[in-house]
Length: 145
Image (cartoon, rainbow, N blue to C red):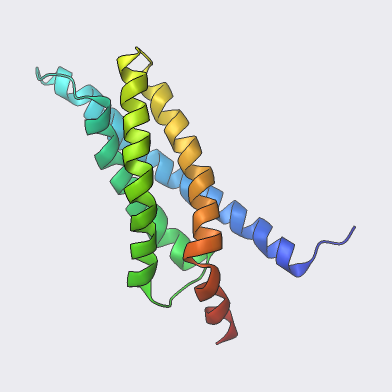
């Protein structure tokens, strides 16, 4: 069975997205860990899951959006609109994942397990959202120009 040009492009996009998401994940894990572990080491109260999750997610999103816009979806058109679309995704994803994370935290789940589950769901949902909504039209237009 021959692979079409479009499916080959989709596979390449998925691989690039995975690699950039992995690098964003490293940023998220390192910043989450710092926020989780440093306050008690400094004699301060441990931060809640939510207080560690939000800043680490924000750093990850900025990194991931920038690299995927430029290299994965190769979209140069209307960056503010693309950023706004991603913001809309996170206006839904962040409170839902944060609330579910708090529920799991209050149930005694390990913070790192919660973060791993949130990151996995974010990876899948964000790829589909960016590919089929955020960059769908602009990537096609950019390549035609």
